[in-house]
Image 1 (cartoon, one colour):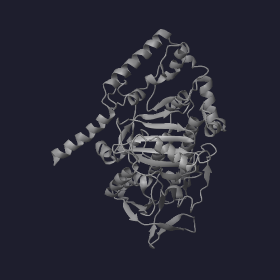
Image 2 (cartoon, one colour):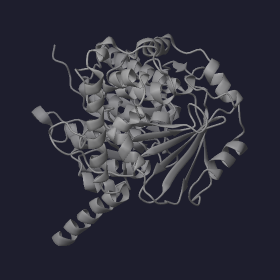
Image 3 (cartoon, one colour):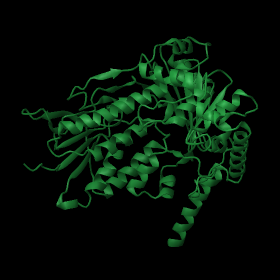
Amino acid sequence: MQAQPLRKIVIVGGGTAGWMAAAPLARLFRHGGGGHRCEVVVVESPEIGTIGVGEATLPPIRAYNDTLGLDGADFIRRTKATFKLGIEFKDWGRIGHRFFHGFGDFGPPIANRPAWSYWLRLQGSGGMPSYEEWSTATVMARRNRFQLPRGDQASAANAYSFAFHFDAGLYAAYLREYAIAHGAQRIEGTIVDAERRPEDGFVAAVRLRDGRRIDGDLFVDCSGFRGLLIDGVMKSPFEDWSHWLPVDSAQAVPCARVEPLTPCTVSAAKPAGWTWRIPLQHRTGNGHVYCSAYTSDEEASRVLLQGLDGPALDTPRQLRFTTGRRREAWVKNVVAIGLSSGFLEPLESTSIQLIMDGVGRLVELLPHRDCAPALAAEFNRRMARQYESIRDFIILHYKLTQRDDSDFWRHCAAMAIPETLQHQIELFRSSGRVAIHDPDSFLDASWASIYLGNGLRPQAHEPAADLLEEPVLREHFRRVRAAIDGTVNAMPAHGDFVARVLDAMAREEAAAA
Protein backbone atom coordinates (compact mmCIF):
# COMPACT_ATOMS: atom_id res chain seq x y z
CA MET A 1 0.00 0.00 0.00
CA GLN A 2 1.57 3.29 -1.11
CA ALA A 3 1.98 5.93 1.57
CA GLN A 4 0.24 9.23 0.96
CA PRO A 5 2.51 12.28 1.00
CA LEU A 6 1.76 15.40 2.99
CA ARG A 7 -0.43 17.96 1.28
CA LYS A 8 -0.36 20.72 3.85
CA ILE A 9 1.80 21.65 6.84
CA VAL A 10 0.34 24.20 9.25
CA ILE A 11 2.75 26.07 11.52
CA VAL A 12 0.99 27.47 14.57
CA GLY A 13 2.71 30.69 15.58
CA GLY A 14 5.27 32.96 13.95
CA GLY A 15 8.18 34.52 15.78
CA THR A 16 11.66 33.04 15.61
CA ALA A 17 10.54 29.42 15.97
CA GLY A 18 7.69 29.63 13.47
CA TRP A 19 9.67 31.26 10.70
CA MET A 20 12.77 29.13 11.37
CA ALA A 21 10.49 26.14 10.74
CA ALA A 22 8.76 27.67 7.73
CA ALA A 23 11.87 28.74 5.81
CA PRO A 24 13.49 25.32 5.22
CA LEU A 25 10.12 23.59 4.72
CA ALA A 26 9.08 26.17 2.11
CA ARG A 27 12.45 25.77 0.38
CA LEU A 28 12.09 21.97 0.44
CA PHE A 29 8.70 21.99 -1.26
CA ARG A 30 9.17 25.00 -3.50
CA HIS A 31 9.89 23.06 -6.66
CA GLY A 32 7.65 20.10 -5.90
CA GLY A 33 10.25 17.42 -6.37
CA GLY A 34 8.84 14.29 -8.02
CA GLY A 35 5.67 16.18 -8.87
CA HIS A 36 4.76 16.47 -5.18
CA ARG A 37 3.74 19.84 -3.81
CA CYS A 38 2.96 20.57 -0.19
CA GLU A 39 1.54 23.80 1.15
CA VAL A 40 3.35 25.44 4.06
CA VAL A 41 1.06 27.75 6.03
CA VAL A 42 2.01 29.90 9.01
CA VAL A 43 -0.81 31.11 11.25
CA GLU A 44 0.45 34.19 13.08
CA SER A 45 -1.54 36.24 15.56
CA PRO A 46 -1.00 40.01 15.76
CA GLU A 47 -2.41 39.91 19.30
CA ILE A 48 0.27 37.63 20.75
CA GLY A 49 3.77 38.96 21.26
CA THR A 50 6.95 36.91 21.02
CA ILE A 51 9.54 36.36 23.73
CA GLY A 52 12.31 37.73 21.52
CA VAL A 53 15.24 37.73 23.96
CA GLY A 54 17.24 35.00 22.20
CA GLU A 55 19.82 37.20 20.54
CA ALA A 56 22.91 35.04 21.06
CA THR A 57 23.56 31.85 19.12
CA LEU A 58 25.94 28.90 18.75
CA PRO A 59 28.15 28.14 15.70
CA PRO A 60 25.69 25.70 13.99
CA ILE A 61 23.45 28.69 13.14
CA ARG A 62 25.87 29.27 10.27
CA ALA A 63 25.01 25.86 8.79
CA TYR A 64 21.30 26.67 9.05
CA ASN A 65 21.80 29.97 7.21
CA ASP A 66 24.01 28.29 4.60
CA THR A 67 21.41 25.58 3.97
CA LEU A 68 18.91 28.30 3.13
CA GLY A 69 21.45 29.96 0.86
CA LEU A 70 21.36 33.25 2.78
CA ASP A 71 23.88 35.88 1.79
CA GLY A 72 26.19 36.36 4.77
CA ALA A 73 26.68 40.11 4.43
CA ASP A 74 22.97 40.71 3.80
CA PHE A 75 22.13 38.66 6.91
CA ILE A 76 24.54 40.73 9.01
CA ARG A 77 23.08 43.99 7.73
CA ARG A 78 19.41 42.99 7.97
CA THR A 79 19.60 41.52 11.49
CA LYS A 80 22.07 44.07 12.94
CA ALA A 81 24.36 41.12 13.67
CA THR A 82 27.77 41.03 15.28
CA PHE A 83 30.13 38.11 15.71
CA LYS A 84 30.33 35.88 18.78
CA LEU A 85 33.42 33.91 19.83
CA GLY A 86 31.98 32.60 23.09
CA ILE A 87 30.84 33.72 26.54
CA GLU A 88 32.79 35.63 29.16
CA PHE A 89 31.77 34.47 32.65
CA LYS A 90 32.32 36.89 35.53
CA ASP A 91 32.02 36.10 39.25
CA TRP A 92 30.69 32.57 38.64
CA GLY A 93 33.21 30.35 40.39
CA ARG A 94 33.96 33.06 42.92
CA ILE A 95 33.63 36.82 43.12
CA GLY A 96 36.40 38.57 41.22
CA HIS A 97 37.11 35.58 38.98
CA ARG A 98 36.41 35.35 35.26
CA PHE A 99 36.78 32.69 32.59
CA PHE A 100 35.86 32.27 28.95
CA HIS A 101 33.88 29.54 27.21
CA GLY A 102 35.20 29.92 23.68
CA PHE A 103 34.22 28.27 20.41
CA GLY A 104 37.26 26.12 19.81
CA ASP A 105 39.84 23.94 21.52
CA PHE A 106 42.83 24.77 23.73
CA GLY A 107 45.42 24.23 21.06
CA PRO A 108 45.64 21.34 18.59
CA PRO A 109 45.35 17.76 19.91
CA ILE A 110 48.60 16.06 20.85
CA ALA A 111 48.93 12.39 19.87
CA ASN A 112 45.16 12.36 19.30
CA ARG A 113 44.46 13.43 22.87
CA PRO A 114 43.12 16.83 23.97
CA ALA A 115 45.79 19.43 24.67
CA TRP A 116 44.42 20.26 28.11
CA SER A 117 45.46 16.78 29.32
CA TYR A 118 49.08 17.72 28.64
CA TRP A 119 48.59 21.18 30.13
CA LEU A 120 47.35 19.52 33.33
CA ARG A 121 50.52 17.45 33.48
CA LEU A 122 52.78 20.50 33.05
CA GLN A 123 50.78 22.61 35.45
CA GLY A 124 51.65 20.14 38.15
CA SER A 125 55.34 20.98 37.80
CA GLY A 126 54.70 24.74 37.62
CA GLY A 127 55.42 27.59 35.26
CA MET A 128 52.39 27.20 33.00
CA PRO A 129 50.12 30.16 32.15
CA SER A 130 46.35 29.73 32.13
CA TYR A 131 45.00 27.06 29.79
CA GLU A 132 43.02 29.86 28.11
CA GLU A 133 46.22 31.20 26.54
CA TRP A 134 45.95 28.30 24.05
CA SER A 135 42.39 29.12 23.04
CA THR A 136 42.45 31.31 19.92
CA ALA A 137 38.82 32.33 20.46
CA THR A 138 39.54 33.45 24.02
CA VAL A 139 42.58 35.53 23.07
CA MET A 140 40.62 37.13 20.21
CA ALA A 141 37.70 38.00 22.48
CA ARG A 142 39.92 39.45 25.21
CA ARG A 143 41.57 41.72 22.63
CA ASN A 144 38.31 42.55 20.81
CA ARG A 145 39.66 41.19 17.52
CA PHE A 146 37.88 39.30 14.77
CA GLN A 147 38.26 37.94 11.27
CA LEU A 148 36.83 34.90 9.54
CA PRO A 149 38.83 31.67 9.91
CA ARG A 150 41.39 31.30 7.11
CA GLY A 151 43.30 28.50 5.42
CA ASP A 152 42.80 24.78 4.85
CA GLN A 153 45.68 23.56 7.01
CA ALA A 154 45.21 23.58 10.78
CA SER A 155 46.69 26.73 12.29
CA ALA A 156 46.00 29.51 14.76
CA ALA A 157 44.19 31.34 11.93
CA ASN A 158 41.39 28.75 11.88
CA ALA A 159 41.55 27.10 15.31
CA TYR A 160 38.27 28.68 16.35
CA SER A 161 34.65 28.88 15.35
CA PHE A 162 32.08 31.64 15.70
CA ALA A 163 28.39 32.37 15.96
CA PHE A 164 26.35 35.56 15.89
CA HIS A 165 24.53 38.01 18.07
CA PHE A 166 21.49 39.38 16.27
CA ASP A 167 18.14 41.06 16.81
CA ALA A 168 15.75 38.10 17.08
CA GLY A 169 12.79 40.14 15.88
CA LEU A 170 14.66 41.25 12.77
CA TYR A 171 15.82 37.67 12.16
CA ALA A 172 12.24 36.37 12.32
CA ALA A 173 11.14 39.08 9.86
CA TYR A 174 14.06 38.22 7.57
CA LEU A 175 13.08 34.53 7.54
CA ARG A 176 9.41 35.40 7.07
CA GLU A 177 10.30 37.33 3.91
CA TYR A 178 12.44 34.38 2.76
CA ALA A 179 9.77 31.78 3.49
CA ILE A 180 7.02 33.71 1.72
CA ALA A 181 9.31 34.25 -1.28
CA HIS A 182 9.75 30.46 -1.39
CA GLY A 183 6.01 29.77 -1.36
CA ALA A 184 4.97 29.78 2.30
CA GLN A 185 1.62 31.37 3.10
CA ARG A 186 1.02 33.65 6.04
CA ILE A 187 -2.44 33.76 7.59
CA GLU A 188 -3.06 36.41 10.22
CA GLY A 189 -5.43 35.35 12.95
CA THR A 190 -5.83 34.05 16.47
CA ILE A 191 -6.45 30.33 17.00
CA VAL A 192 -9.28 29.61 19.43
CA ASP A 193 -9.98 25.92 18.86
CA ALA A 194 -8.77 22.72 17.22
CA GLU A 195 -10.67 19.84 15.62
CA ARG A 196 -9.54 16.24 16.08
CA ARG A 197 -10.36 13.25 13.93
CA PRO A 198 -12.41 10.80 16.01
CA GLU A 199 -10.87 7.72 14.42
CA ASP A 200 -7.23 8.39 15.43
CA GLY A 201 -7.07 11.59 17.48
CA PHE A 202 -5.06 13.47 14.86
CA VAL A 203 -5.61 17.22 14.60
CA ALA A 204 -7.72 17.85 11.51
CA ALA A 205 -7.86 21.65 11.60
CA VAL A 206 -7.57 24.75 13.73
CA ARG A 207 -10.24 27.43 13.93
CA LEU A 208 -9.59 31.15 14.12
CA ARG A 209 -11.54 33.70 16.13
CA ASP A 210 -13.14 35.06 12.97
CA GLY A 211 -14.50 31.62 12.10
CA ARG A 212 -11.98 30.56 9.49
CA ARG A 213 -10.99 26.90 9.46
CA ILE A 214 -7.39 25.94 8.59
CA ASP A 215 -7.01 22.24 7.83
CA GLY A 216 -3.74 20.34 7.51
CA ASP A 217 -1.96 17.00 7.60
CA LEU A 218 0.93 17.98 9.91
CA PHE A 219 0.80 20.71 12.56
CA VAL A 220 3.98 22.31 13.90
CA ASP A 221 3.33 23.95 17.26
CA CYS A 222 5.46 27.10 17.54
CA SER A 223 3.08 28.85 19.92
CA GLY A 224 5.65 29.39 22.65
CA PHE A 225 4.99 28.74 26.32
CA ARG A 226 1.24 28.44 25.57
CA GLY A 227 1.74 25.13 23.74
CA LEU A 228 -1.64 25.52 22.03
CA LEU A 229 -1.60 22.08 20.43
CA ILE A 230 1.07 20.01 22.18
CA ASP A 231 -0.35 20.94 25.59
CA GLY A 232 -3.84 22.24 24.95
CA VAL A 233 -4.87 19.40 22.61
CA MET A 234 -2.38 16.54 22.90
CA LYS A 235 -1.78 16.98 26.64
CA SER A 236 1.86 15.95 26.43
CA PRO A 237 3.15 15.98 30.05
CA PHE A 238 5.72 18.60 31.04
CA GLU A 239 8.77 17.51 33.06
CA ASP A 240 9.57 20.26 35.56
CA TRP A 241 13.33 20.69 36.11
CA SER A 242 13.16 23.70 38.42
CA HIS A 243 14.56 21.63 41.32
CA TRP A 244 17.80 21.50 39.31
CA LEU A 245 17.51 24.87 37.57
CA PRO A 246 15.80 27.12 40.11
CA VAL A 247 15.86 30.43 38.22
CA ASP A 248 12.31 31.20 37.12
CA SER A 249 12.24 34.88 36.15
CA ALA A 250 13.96 37.28 33.80
CA GLN A 251 13.92 40.95 32.93
CA ALA A 252 15.23 42.26 29.62
CA VAL A 253 16.10 45.81 28.55
CA PRO A 254 18.13 47.28 25.68
CA CYS A 255 20.65 50.07 26.16
CA ALA A 256 22.63 52.29 23.81
CA ARG A 257 25.65 50.74 22.12
CA VAL A 258 29.00 51.62 23.62
CA GLU A 259 32.53 51.11 22.33
CA PRO A 260 34.34 48.87 21.82
CA LEU A 261 32.02 46.44 20.02
CA THR A 262 32.92 43.19 21.76
CA PRO A 263 32.81 39.78 19.97
CA CYS A 264 31.36 37.86 22.91
CA THR A 265 28.40 37.54 25.24
CA VAL A 266 29.03 38.45 28.87
CA SER A 267 27.38 36.61 31.76
CA ALA A 268 27.93 38.07 35.23
CA ALA A 269 26.79 36.16 38.30
CA LYS A 270 24.66 38.11 40.77
CA PRO A 271 23.36 37.31 44.30
CA ALA A 272 20.22 35.55 43.00
CA GLY A 273 21.10 34.71 39.40
CA TRP A 274 23.05 36.29 36.57
CA THR A 275 22.94 39.04 33.95
CA TRP A 276 23.63 38.93 30.23
CA ARG A 277 25.13 41.49 27.87
CA ILE A 278 24.76 40.98 24.10
CA PRO A 279 26.29 43.62 21.78
CA LEU A 280 24.52 44.38 18.49
CA GLN A 281 25.23 46.96 15.81
CA HIS A 282 22.48 49.35 16.92
CA ARG A 283 22.17 48.63 20.64
CA THR A 284 23.19 46.30 23.45
CA GLY A 285 20.78 43.66 24.76
CA ASN A 286 20.78 43.16 28.52
CA GLY A 287 18.91 40.92 30.90
CA HIS A 288 18.79 39.59 34.43
CA VAL A 289 17.85 35.93 35.00
CA TYR A 290 17.05 35.21 38.64
CA CYS A 291 15.24 33.05 41.16
CA SER A 292 12.16 34.79 42.58
CA ALA A 293 12.50 32.82 45.84
CA TYR A 294 15.73 34.69 46.62
CA THR A 295 15.06 38.24 45.40
CA SER A 296 12.21 40.57 44.49
CA ASP A 297 11.37 41.84 41.02
CA GLU A 298 12.15 45.37 42.20
CA GLU A 299 15.61 44.38 43.40
CA ALA A 300 16.22 42.38 40.22
CA SER A 301 15.36 45.46 38.17
CA ARG A 302 17.71 47.60 40.23
CA VAL A 303 20.58 45.14 39.71
CA LEU A 304 19.90 45.03 35.96
CA LEU A 305 19.70 48.79 35.43
CA GLN A 306 22.66 49.49 37.70
CA GLY A 307 24.84 47.21 35.57
CA LEU A 308 24.12 48.79 32.17
CA ASP A 309 27.09 50.35 30.41
CA GLY A 310 24.92 52.69 28.32
CA PRO A 311 21.65 54.63 28.72
CA ALA A 312 18.57 52.36 28.92
CA LEU A 313 16.38 52.57 25.82
CA ASP A 314 13.25 51.18 27.48
CA THR A 315 11.91 49.91 30.79
CA PRO A 316 12.71 46.29 31.77
CA ARG A 317 10.30 43.70 30.37
CA GLN A 318 9.27 40.97 32.81
CA LEU A 319 9.28 37.26 31.90
CA ARG A 320 8.30 34.16 33.91
CA PHE A 321 9.17 30.60 33.05
CA THR A 322 9.58 27.05 34.30
CA THR A 323 12.56 25.06 33.09
CA GLY A 324 11.84 21.62 31.69
CA ARG A 325 10.62 19.84 28.58
CA ARG A 326 7.64 18.01 27.13
CA ARG A 327 7.79 14.28 27.71
CA GLU A 328 7.01 13.92 24.00
CA ALA A 329 7.47 16.82 21.60
CA TRP A 330 5.93 14.88 18.69
CA VAL A 331 2.48 13.37 19.38
CA LYS A 332 0.42 11.94 16.50
CA ASN A 333 0.52 14.70 13.84
CA VAL A 334 1.61 17.54 16.14
CA VAL A 335 5.31 18.48 16.47
CA ALA A 336 6.34 21.07 19.04
CA ILE A 337 9.29 23.29 18.16
CA GLY A 338 10.86 25.94 20.39
CA LEU A 339 9.35 27.05 23.69
CA SER A 340 6.28 24.87 23.20
CA SER A 341 8.56 21.80 23.46
CA GLY A 342 10.54 22.96 26.47
CA PHE A 343 12.64 25.72 27.97
CA LEU A 344 16.19 25.85 29.27
CA GLU A 345 17.37 29.19 30.62
CA PRO A 346 19.48 31.24 28.17
CA LEU A 347 22.80 30.81 30.00
CA GLU A 348 24.56 29.07 27.08
CA SER A 349 22.48 30.50 24.21
CA THR A 350 20.73 27.23 23.43
CA SER A 351 17.17 28.41 22.69
CA ILE A 352 17.69 29.13 19.00
CA GLN A 353 19.93 26.05 18.74
CA LEU A 354 17.11 23.83 20.01
CA ILE A 355 14.71 25.40 17.51
CA MET A 356 17.18 24.80 14.70
CA ASP A 357 17.83 21.19 15.71
CA GLY A 358 14.12 20.49 16.14
CA VAL A 359 13.45 21.84 12.65
CA GLY A 360 16.39 19.90 11.22
CA ARG A 361 15.16 16.64 12.70
CA LEU A 362 11.65 17.30 11.47
CA VAL A 363 12.96 17.80 7.93
CA GLU A 364 15.12 14.67 8.26
CA LEU A 365 12.22 12.59 9.62
CA LEU A 366 9.47 14.23 7.57
CA PRO A 367 6.50 11.84 7.64
CA HIS A 368 3.81 10.85 5.21
CA ARG A 369 0.22 11.67 6.08
CA ASP A 370 0.00 8.75 8.50
CA CYS A 371 2.82 10.18 10.69
CA ALA A 372 4.34 6.79 11.44
CA PRO A 373 4.81 6.38 15.22
CA ALA A 374 8.41 5.20 14.75
CA LEU A 375 9.34 8.59 13.29
CA ALA A 376 7.82 10.38 16.25
CA ALA A 377 9.62 8.03 18.65
CA GLU A 378 12.99 8.73 17.02
CA PHE A 379 12.40 12.48 17.04
CA ASN A 380 11.41 12.35 20.70
CA ARG A 381 14.39 10.18 21.63
CA ARG A 382 16.89 12.55 20.06
CA MET A 383 15.26 15.71 21.36
CA ALA A 384 15.04 14.26 24.88
CA ARG A 385 18.72 13.31 24.82
CA GLN A 386 19.69 16.78 23.68
CA TYR A 387 17.52 18.59 26.22
CA GLU A 388 18.89 16.43 29.04
CA SER A 389 22.51 16.91 27.98
CA ILE A 390 22.12 20.69 27.75
CA ARG A 391 20.26 20.66 31.06
CA ASP A 392 23.21 18.97 32.74
CA PHE A 393 25.68 21.33 31.08
CA ILE A 394 23.82 24.34 32.45
CA ILE A 395 23.43 22.83 35.92
CA LEU A 396 27.21 22.34 35.96
CA HIS A 397 27.76 26.12 35.95
CA TYR A 398 25.80 26.46 39.18
CA LYS A 399 26.89 23.30 40.96
CA LEU A 400 30.63 23.97 40.77
CA THR A 401 30.37 27.38 42.42
CA GLN A 402 32.62 28.24 45.35
CA ARG A 403 30.43 31.22 46.24
CA ASP A 404 28.74 31.26 49.63
CA ASP A 405 27.84 34.96 49.79
CA SER A 406 24.09 34.51 49.29
CA ASP A 407 21.35 31.98 50.02
CA PHE A 408 20.93 31.36 46.29
CA TRP A 409 24.53 30.30 45.73
CA ARG A 410 24.59 28.22 48.90
CA HIS A 411 21.48 26.44 47.61
CA CYS A 412 23.15 25.77 44.24
CA ALA A 413 26.28 24.34 45.84
CA ALA A 414 24.25 22.00 48.07
CA MET A 415 21.48 20.91 45.68
CA ALA A 416 21.16 17.37 44.37
CA ILE A 417 21.96 16.93 40.67
CA PRO A 418 21.09 14.29 38.03
CA GLU A 419 23.07 11.05 38.22
CA THR A 420 24.27 11.60 34.65
CA LEU A 421 25.93 14.87 35.62
CA GLN A 422 27.31 13.48 38.86
CA HIS A 423 29.10 10.79 36.85
CA GLN A 424 30.53 13.37 34.45
CA ILE A 425 31.87 15.52 37.28
CA GLU A 426 33.43 12.58 39.09
CA LEU A 427 35.05 11.31 35.89
CA PHE A 428 36.72 14.66 35.24
CA ARG A 429 37.65 15.17 38.89
CA SER A 430 39.35 11.79 39.11
CA SER A 431 41.07 11.57 35.72
CA GLY A 432 40.66 14.71 33.62
CA ARG A 433 38.48 12.84 31.12
CA VAL A 434 35.24 14.19 29.66
CA ALA A 435 32.14 12.05 29.18
CA ILE A 436 29.81 13.10 26.35
CA HIS A 437 26.21 11.86 26.50
CA ASP A 438 24.96 13.63 23.40
CA PRO A 439 27.23 14.25 20.37
CA ASP A 440 24.71 16.81 19.06
CA SER A 441 25.22 19.07 22.09
CA PHE A 442 28.29 20.57 23.77
CA LEU A 443 31.48 18.60 23.22
CA ASP A 444 34.73 17.96 25.11
CA ALA A 445 36.33 21.40 24.95
CA SER A 446 33.15 23.11 26.17
CA TRP A 447 32.80 20.81 29.16
CA ALA A 448 36.51 21.20 30.00
CA SER A 449 36.10 24.97 29.79
CA ILE A 450 33.35 24.97 32.43
CA TYR A 451 35.14 22.46 34.67
CA LEU A 452 38.44 24.33 34.60
CA GLY A 453 36.87 27.78 34.55
CA ASN A 454 35.02 27.06 37.77
CA GLY A 455 38.16 25.78 39.45
CA LEU A 456 37.71 22.01 39.22
CA ARG A 457 41.22 20.55 38.91
CA PRO A 458 41.50 16.80 38.27
CA GLN A 459 43.28 14.65 40.82
CA ALA A 460 45.21 12.99 38.00
CA HIS A 461 45.85 13.45 34.29
CA GLU A 462 45.65 10.88 31.52
CA PRO A 463 48.65 8.48 31.50
CA ALA A 464 49.18 9.22 27.79
CA ALA A 465 50.30 12.72 28.75
CA ASP A 466 53.41 11.23 30.41
CA LEU A 467 54.66 9.65 27.21
CA LEU A 468 56.22 12.84 25.85
CA GLU A 469 59.32 14.41 27.39
CA GLU A 470 58.58 17.56 29.34
CA PRO A 471 60.99 19.89 27.45
CA VAL A 472 59.48 18.82 24.13
CA LEU A 473 55.98 19.37 25.46
CA ARG A 474 56.79 22.80 26.88
CA GLU A 475 58.34 23.87 23.58
CA HIS A 476 55.22 22.73 21.75
CA PHE A 477 53.00 24.83 24.01
CA ARG A 478 55.35 27.82 23.65
CA ARG A 479 55.18 27.69 19.85
CA VAL A 480 51.40 27.33 19.77
CA ARG A 481 50.98 30.26 22.16
CA ALA A 482 53.34 32.42 20.08
CA ALA A 483 51.43 31.55 16.90
CA ILE A 484 48.12 32.51 18.49
CA ASP A 485 49.57 35.76 19.82
CA GLY A 486 50.97 36.82 16.44
CA THR A 487 47.87 35.77 14.53
CA VAL A 488 45.44 37.60 16.80
CA ASN A 489 47.53 40.79 16.89
CA ALA A 490 47.30 40.96 13.09
CA MET A 491 43.49 40.78 13.12
CA PRO A 492 41.30 43.89 12.85
CA ALA A 493 39.19 45.10 15.75
CA HIS A 494 35.80 43.41 15.83
CA GLY A 495 33.93 46.67 15.27
CA ASP A 496 36.16 47.50 12.30
CA PHE A 497 35.54 44.08 10.77
CA VAL A 498 31.75 44.47 11.03
CA ALA A 499 32.02 47.96 9.49
CA ARG A 500 34.10 46.55 6.60
CA VAL A 501 31.44 43.93 5.84
CA LEU A 502 28.72 46.58 5.75
CA ASP A 503 30.83 49.05 3.75
CA ALA A 504 31.72 46.42 1.15
CA MET A 505 28.06 45.55 0.68
CA ALA A 506 27.11 49.23 0.36
CA ARG A 507 29.78 49.72 -2.32
CA GLU A 508 28.54 46.69 -4.25
CA GLU A 509 24.98 47.97 -4.17
CA ALA A 510 26.09 51.45 -5.26
CA ALA A 511 28.05 50.01 -8.18
CA ALA A 512 25.07 47.92 -9.27
CA ALA A 513 22.63 50.86 -9.10
